[in-house]
Figure 1 (tube, one colour):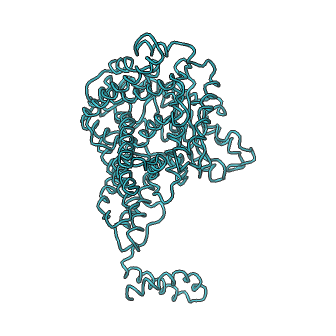
Figure 2 (cartoon, one colour; figure 1 turned 135 degrees about the vertical axis):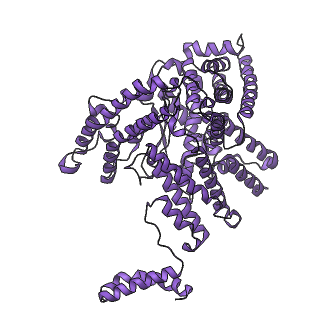
Figure 3 (cartoon, helix red, strand yellow; figure 1 turned 45 degrees about the horizontal axis):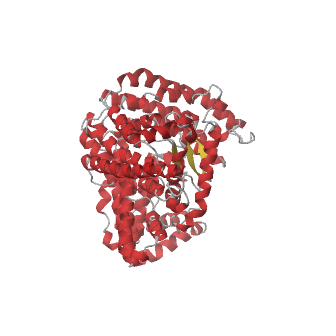
Length: 631
């Protein structure tokens, strides 16, 4: 059959085949089926892979142009395959972002699981030249550029054994397990089946993680001792003698008892048994391994450069988190310059207040004076809520696009409050029926100053991470991989830090102490550039990093220690904030210079957030295109 006729008639035959079967002899049906298959093959078509097929099968199909009616369809298939692969690799991320395809699964943290990950990335990396960007629409070309960067960054990252450094006391995979279970939907029967399946998988995850960490020890690659010192205690805090007090039980605690599992038992009974008989023993076993085996053998050094091939490894971490080609030395110098600039602005506020003494004395005053601290945790949380509600009505003055998804303020869970930062954001999901949440720590109230609360609210809630993530989720015609990968820290955290600078325009920073507080947060991010590179590239000790922080920051000593241990645990991640913020401010200044009185702040912010999370070079292209269009 000629190709054109095959394309025209085969869909019609296929559509009517089911009805035709009823009135045709069996032999005729068989012959017709063979004919249809033959026509399909003559067109060069290949049987499309089944849903959730292995990435190898999906890419084999997508690699053949003749299987698609257009390059746009083929590109979308590639994006879908990548998103599916990433969600299979890290199923909890899908839960957080509202894709519940793999809600019954956990990340495969066994050594074999990471081998499979590398094999998949090798195949995906080979797709970087499959499409000619000049023949694609502007949106498709941008998304293909983002896709290529995402795949390449993951591919390069997996050339190094990052998987041996998966556990730390700041935000390790064990925290992730508890947070994942608390984020799962439990409204439908399928949700409850997924919840139970995940609960049943926790013991396997912990056993695989133990095997993985032991393999790292055997190869001489471990976390620094100070980065895992609190992990055994954290594991024990997740164990509840009464299963109804377990953090794993909370999501289903208020379900009606009439919802039954298999055999007529309620889902609560099933989960209580899993917690007592499977989860608690697994947590205790992992606790014992960390305390008796891992901690005694964890390394006593701090920098990534002290591990095999450490200098190249750290440069890869810089590239991954900043999406730039800056070196450790470049960033170290940028950090020192920013510290000096911000210090001058801080001194100007001290002079305005007629305070007698320099920055160190003023910082001591801010740390020690009781007027700057709460004594009641509820008052701290109430004040955060009040700040956010003052921001909300001002947001339309700076943004044309506002997120639909709401957000709220919660207290940091007790099981991670001691080692958690002062505040952080957890994404919500419209599909999952879950708001975004700004979590604030009430641990050690003497280290939670009032003068930092406005800046933290801007960064973690609105217009910071909640805006950036929720708007990204709500954009139309965006490929799912841009949320499934959750990459490009420099954009996400750069936006959060940039959002802190918008306080005055949103009715905040009317108090000089709050303005000074904002500068303390900005200098904190500049200090990160100096300290992170100092530790991982320039042989700084942990104490040197703490001392530099103390000399240039008004943060409480507890927060400084937590911060430094975080930089040690996550090489390069802390660089993203300031590098990203500087790029956004650079682009804003360029737009203001080129557009003059025609510069529209709402339009600028909308274009920055309007393509979702992207690497900084793509952001720059987007802003330059917007400037050209405005002109």
